Image 1 (cartoon, rainbow, N blue to C red):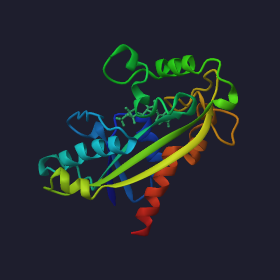
Image 2: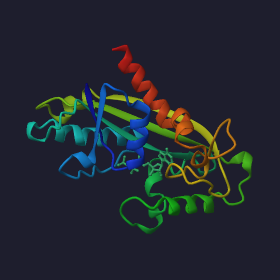
Image 3: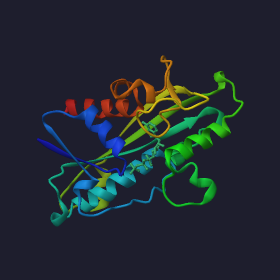
Image 4: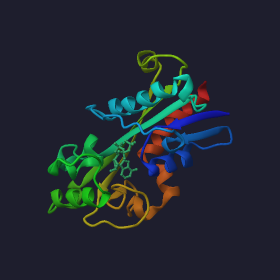
Length: 219
Ligand code: ITT
């Protein structure tokens, strides 16, 4: 039995990761199982850097004997949307896209992020509404008593991309974030309408987790 601590404050990510990676020999813990709230500063310029910041913050905490919850691995996800017509924005700022204008701290509500995106995309023709979701995963072993440098050296990175295009109006109630606007390539409806089963086969997160699972299977 392997225990994996999912280092995210986003309950939707936890649900998707459990759904995709779950199996009889894996137990998942997440922030609600820990007695503290850690809020890593996502100061990285890339998804990969931010995923590593989150994974290492939690792995360093769990590596202390009194804090360990039986977790062997920490898994962190940093992800977001890259829109071609906006030169790759919102990118690493996806969760706080609306707040960039107001200076407010923390993530913005999904509806505000979506409204800002639609405003910036107003008048852009369907053929130029291409975008992609990107997911970077950092997998860090919890090494008892080790420092952050040792665990950084042992961290593995995985990435997944899902190409698609943006609608002109939100549609659907499933998923989270930009799902009501994002239509994956080869489909004619957004993730929010396609449902969890389809999303968990096609998504950026599914692809990154597939790469992780392949690496585990090869061990
Ligand atoms: P943690 O940092 O605690 O993991 P977070 O939600 O702040 O949670 P990120 O910093 O990685 O996570 O930001 C991810 C944002 O990108 C998320 O809030 C959505 O706006 C968007 N996003 C990522 N994956 C998505 C998905 O599968 N569907 C829709 N939007 C997604």
